[in-house]
Image (cartoon, rainbow, N blue to C red; front, side, top):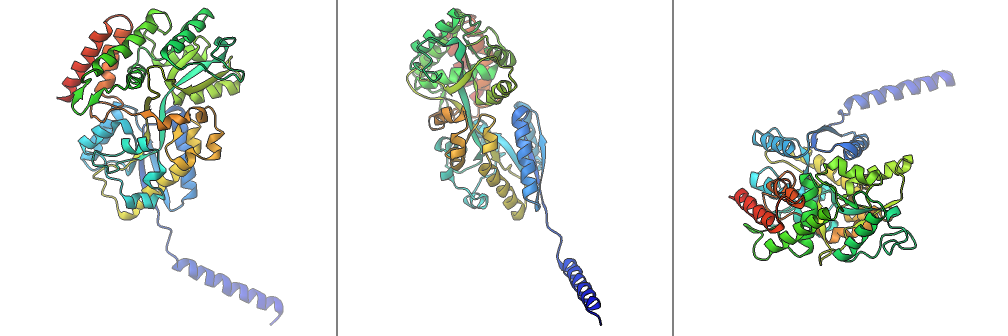
Length: 430
């Protein structure tokens, strides 16, 4: 036998052995995970990219995602699906909806074993987000993904030459309501059509500003089963009065829908915008394209009423009850959640603060602006009251558009509006 023939024979035997080995190896088991979210716009694009990356990195797990309509339609579908045992394996959830979700019985407990399978622990998350994700008994029912809050955006051109812009072009000198209103007056003198813009004709925009001003006074919207008890009624009236005065002075837009309120700022007609961190990508993209026309920044809402705090909420991951999944699938779901948390830096590009502290405290995040500038708010965030009538698409939001919005436009006195909010929410609690 020649050397060549010997080599060919050896190669033939090797290939045959390999084929036999492959035949003996079972096919890779794939866990198919059904995912629901309510994320549209920039958030939706970023989440789809994260899911795609996860699928590529985990050939043994396949995520099939569905995006549903935000707000009431989403949570109604979740409730209905869970009731008939046809919900997803994992879903995004607002922590502000946690009390109602627990009352409706749609959320499964996230156990210590679950967290271990995700490679995380409760101590890895900001305390406020863990509390908001837990039931009254302390059990965890969701894993916080971010902290998103109201922040104060500013247009530097209206503040140049004033005491409100330092040598580095950073907002400064606003340490009280008096300071802020002085800055609004300066902007008005410089030609701002609406010195401060927010969605004055939208339930969410009105609620977030109102709740921030209430909480900055140390006020509570709901305590137990009581709405605005004691001096909280007066504090609510004072919050509404502040917003009303901004209208009387021509400092805020009238009946502005959400999109219009944002357009006032991006078109250079407002000095300030009170809005969520989720508008950071809008401004960053416009700046990158050269279509913004001014320099901007964003900071934590200053202490206007005595306490440094602001409205906040979180997107979180939850497992619906009645899911009937195997232990292997549940482990795959927690693997997914843990991976999302550890790769949250790209999610932070949407303006959010990662709820997972190892990412929020990383050097990479500390270089991310303006997120890093306002990230301290994670430690002073005010989540909605623990009540089934608060949170996204709730009676509290309804009261904001039906009662508070008309009041700040002059159709009711502040105390009258506060009393009506109290009556409406007390009725909703019955």
